[in-house]
Image (cartoon, rainbow, N blue to C red; front, side, top):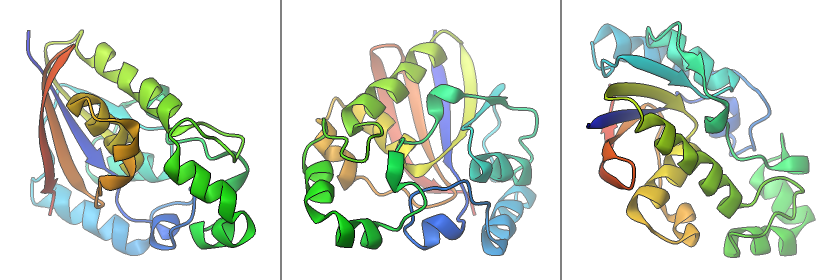
Length: 191
């Protein structure tokens, strides 16, 4: 049984543009426009099932791409950054430089009282076990860090590699295979 999972990174919004930890902000006008353009161009992967990360940005991206009716996938929720939510990385770095350095250097660290990168990769990696139970295609609209975590898990890379994976908005990362053995195809733009 072969499964294909198409991870579509959400369109750009104000939080991403400002390098701010997600605070539930919506897509901005350019993000909405880009997603609608991709949908109009027929660039959205066809899938039997649709999963959507439970963020405003991902839900709005899914709708703009014509992927309404997808199920909310709580296991694909973004990294919980605890008390840093809504702040920019620059603000947090100025206020808590040692904590940020520890967080970026140690995947088991969670100085923000949220989720460590290791725990996040483990949680999100569980989604692949669920996806492997279904033959066929799934399209999942997710935040960039979800794609990063799944790439780390699929490649068997250490969690420290999480920070080395760039995921632009509205790109598709394809995973194909089955539980325990996945192939990776990265970064195809939707537009």
